[in-house]
Image (tube, rainbow, N blue to C red; front, top):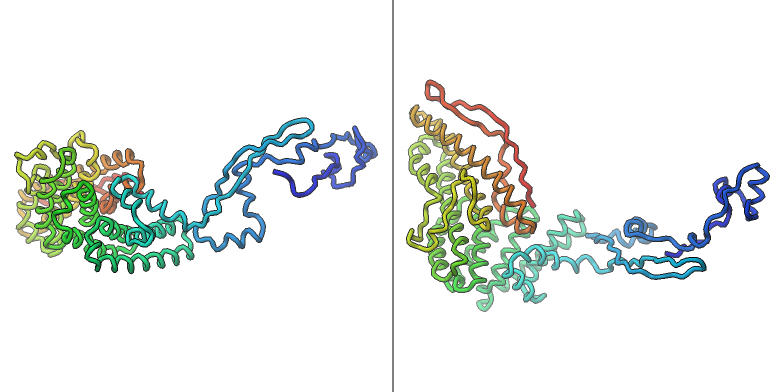
Length: 461
């Protein structure tokens, strides 16, 4: 680009020594008087223009106090993108091609919704609903609030925080109005909007408020009734919300398990054959959650004897969880889509592998903790301790194998938000303390442990 000041025409030696050059050619008088060899003069053509690159433009663009004052208030400074195109300048002896750079001038708020939409472009149902959302709709405002939270996490700006809080307040007010409107509250857009509010809380690390939105999602599923399962979009929304809501609540509403059975029956009635693997996977996650909830309720009692008394039922359910099809029967066409045991060398139906592995990982962690505490019961026999030791070792092997499977499958998922959904609610189990203990029983039937390290880094979003 053109220089704003005229460059010096002095010879190289005079410029380096910072003295006045008499510009005599081919060698200046100053160099001759000093007994130096004059190295000549610069090419005046090259001094008229500088070839700017993207890196040089970005490094110099914001120099100067005036530019710094203008950008200080920007809560999310956008990348300085250089849109280049060539302009040709003719000089006396050559033609110089100069890139022309133009920075993006849009305010950062204009990029909130595109980023929010980009987080969900893996689902055609979500993308279509967001494209149709008007700016004054509850869905649009909820997605905008989520986008603000997403940008705040990137920029770490106090000004961005104020934008996020303001957007969230607007979204909550709009959602309350929509939920009290009998013409709107059963719409797909409202269900997706509440999901966005929950994801907002997740981005803002406000997990207690997430539970409130989670309960709202469950209640909306109830209010929408059976008609939601007649449509493909309705079923797609249900599966996403279903996975989200009972990943976040370890002990669900007591009504949940009975209602889920009804939901699965309705989905089975209307779904297409291509959806059978997904339905089978969600039935499996349902039973994993049910067993985990039963185990957690027993652990909460803090009584090892109570755990020991219920150990046979719990361990039998956990052993057979891959084969449970209820509420469907083994005559159903869904039954042919089998669930592989965690130690199986391969995983069928790759599309639902991360989902199934996540829930099986949670179950293995719960069973591991269950047998550890049950073996501490005073009434536990030496034979039971031997059994618990074998189960404990098997759970450790399952956890190791499942972590590796999840890591391998996550590497195949390029979309960051889809990866987040795939691991939702399971990161605590993916990063459980890395010291795993293999156990054995001594001659007295007492379980003893041998520690071994098993560190596996799972890439999460």
